[in-house]
Image (cartoon, rainbow over all chains, first blue to last red; front, top):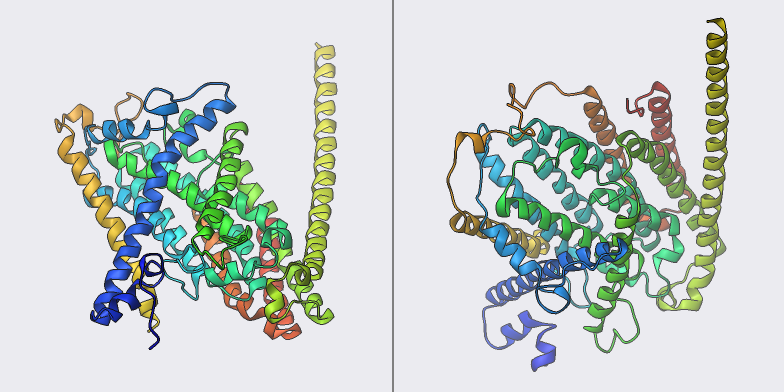
Length: 417
Length: 119
């Protein structure tokens, strides 16, 4: 066994072998390193949550020409702390007729399901909770647990609005999972692996965003719906169902739902940055792996702020529009996109322009493949937008014809009297 | 061996459940606890709740659930195919083309039958 360097900066990268080298039981060393890593990973979303709450309100306020929270701390940055304290000291009400065990379980699921997602997020080339060979599948599976919390909360609250809100939300979440998974399929196809580190490594030459823009945009939209962000925030349509599935929750149990929602929105941005924007890829990560953390953070913030601005500028869609947008637009588009990408990848293989070996991390070697895929994607976008525009025009003409007919009828009716 | 890979995920699950439990317990300890029958009644904008909340629900929600199950299971079949797709070559493309064709035929049937309409 080669001697490892166990001075301060290096020990961060290989704690378990270092401890074992120091004479510790190998299993115990593994256990300690996993535990420490897990505490760090869990602390990360919690720490960002405190900042996120303020950022969210600040950005929304700026969009609406307000100032936002500005009393607690500099620029109101510490606003989350008194908010959390206030929530803590609120009365914890369990509604009569609630299924108490399940009712109390729901907020815990809400919180845990989001934190669990962070287990497979690669922060740097060396730091990842668990580099599973089925990382992408793990993401899909764990993200689906979020659906359970809503069903459980809505069902156990013994409240009609909560149940109605839960049904709606589940219909939405289930529907948008199909294009989400189909969009995630494209990077897996290009990279040929489901491991999250492998997906990032495959983007060394070129980000998947440029190879598969259709999939990237679809993934972003589906994520926006999965996290219940505008324009898909029907689950909190207060004018119709008051607050949705979490109406009967108070105090910090309600806070857990909110925390889960905010963290999920941020986590979705992290996942987008990892899968489409190259994750920790950036100059100098080979020499100083911890730099990758900074790159990933920067990319995530860009995606997140984009989502925030989108959230505060677009109006809410109706539920029938929501469902038909998914089933009649996104799902067919996703299937076509999978087919087109599969065909194009075969063409790339046939032409022999796929980068091999070390060349895969070279920008120039990746260019031909990227150009082919990008052109294909632009073709899909162009065809689909033309089709949609023509269908919309026909629909409009038909509507106008019907309107004109009714007008004539009304006039005739008035003349007869 | 393969299960050991999941150790961090399992540890994270334990930790997050623990943190969530602690926070909920803490808020229960810190907050007041004075239940009254009015306070515990299900919130319905001030109206007296009539009957149970769990009752018959519109069938369209079942329809969405069934659609989802069909699609999600088929989509999950795509993932292992996507991993080895580049090695399979044209053979993989044709096989998946057939699979996708069957999926699409079913999808078009659903569409024409009006299963995708939300009334």
